[in-house]
Length: 307
Image 1 (cartoon, helix red, strand yellow):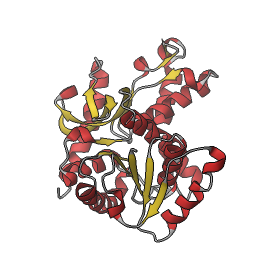
Image 2 (image 1 turned 120 degrees about the vertical axis):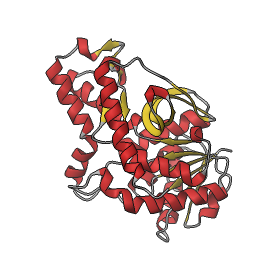
Image 3 (image 1 turned 30 degrees about the vertical axis):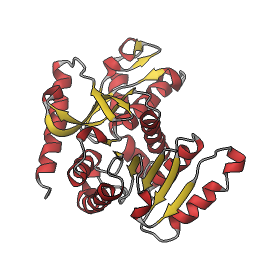
Image 4 (image 1 turned 90 degrees about the horizontal axis):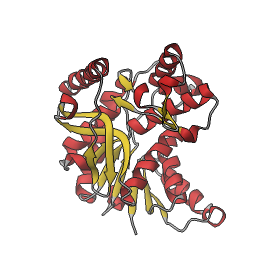
């Protein structure tokens, strides 16, 4: 049986565990430093199994040892944004958290694929890579799927069409410098550039960039978790079932798109080995410039860290 560990039993982590269990992607370990919380949530979830009809085991724990031999580890642990905070405001606190988690992954789950969700996501994925020492293809950031589905949602709402028919593509960092690609965003294969005017597209692009902050401002005491957990689960499913889905994710660059030694949101093939290929799109000059701005901001932020 596949074993999946989710580190962090907050809203994102616990909802991810629920989705993974209900899709029967594997047995799940939910770990958190707060005593009793992961155990209680795991027991509550298991008691839903007879109704929902899943047959995997869900265990809550405060001990990293219980992630032993996991096939996939998802890192959601860290403080969430509050109103007025940027993702970058979280760097110092979450750097320590993700660093410690990554060292435990290296010890107890040395053959795992790691999906990083903690913000600021691209930077924390870089931290996880350095602290685990894993092959870069096995350390992936969950950003592009979330940003892309937000863009897709706003397109569907604007056009009054089924969200199922919208495929969106967002590149770059998970933040203010993300790069939504209207040319590669389609409704049943039709580019949205043929379905709405430039002003509408620009408005939806801006809303996508501010998508997380919009939810933070509305919730006031937390951040998004339904869409992030769905995005994580999609990635986990592609990995454990070796589906080789083409999905946007934060992947390590070896010179693709003109960048290296940095994590950037790009389309990748996700399978049992993690990132099995990076798909290079033919970008326009303005798109290349936007991606370069995103990359430079990330490089500058990473350069200030003691890694």
